[in-house]
Length: 276
Ligand code: C2E
Ligand code: CA
Ligand code: CA
Ligand code: CA
Image 1 (cartoon, rainbow, N blue to C red):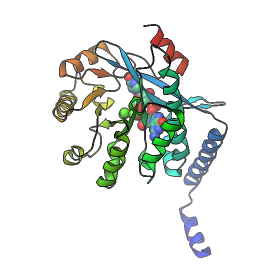
Image 2: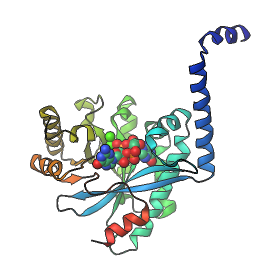
Image 3: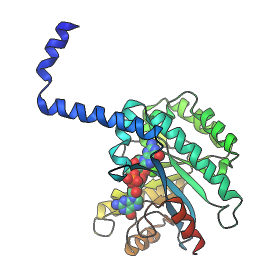
Image 4: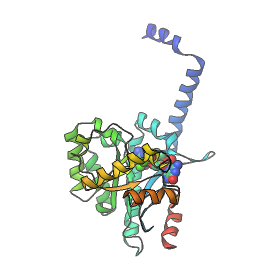
């Protein structure tokens, strides 16, 4: 071990050492943030063609004591690597299910669905379906109001295993969306075997949909695919009316993006609903 250690020293250039220290510090900080309850959930409205809000995507935020709101893009990858995504993801599910229960007794809110991002590491757990059902039951939430967003990366797992977890959850009413669709490597043959409810057009295809014929063609293809498979389709990253109109033209009638609202804190989301 000592010899190996000495050999390894060759690879410890200062820059790399600095990045390892930064990474360790970040890992430590994430653990502390979880204990100190510094994670918040923001809600981004999902709207239909008439502009009605029918649900929200739950998006994690780290309310850092000195750095303000930190985007998950900067900590989710490390949380996945270290496994911290498991308690964190559990927390997000508990929180959103409790939110669903609060809304269930409020007149203008009872119809709302919440879409929750699930990382592959969470989904891979043998008891993933049981965990979700236990969280729903404990909160007393209606499973039909919970949508789970999976990415194509889950297709690396055993197909029978994916199917059986999804089917168990679907039997109770939970729905599934395939997030960032088109950016991964999903084989359509695989895709059609999954009991999905929705495809989500990645924002990278929405951004230049008006100017880039390839992006338009991809969006069009996804919308046609969804229609032929009997799935709902939603576009993310919709920032302008022109993008929304284009998508509607192509047959996509559900949207999420800054055009409607940024992800906002729960109070602000409820105020948005009540102001309509
Ligand atoms: P995502 O699931 O693809 O979420 C969409 C991202 O696009 C969000 O970034 C959202 O704030 C942003 N966005 C929404 N509308 C617009 C728009 O009109 N224009 C642009 N440019 N961006 C828009 P965010 O909140 O920083 O989240 C980043 C990623 O972190 C998410 O990407 C998701 O993969 C991951 N994430 C967030 N919350 C969770 C969570 O609770 N669990 C897990 N496993 N991952 C999460
Ligand atoms: Ca998502
Ligand atoms: Ca997405
Ligand atoms: Ca995306």
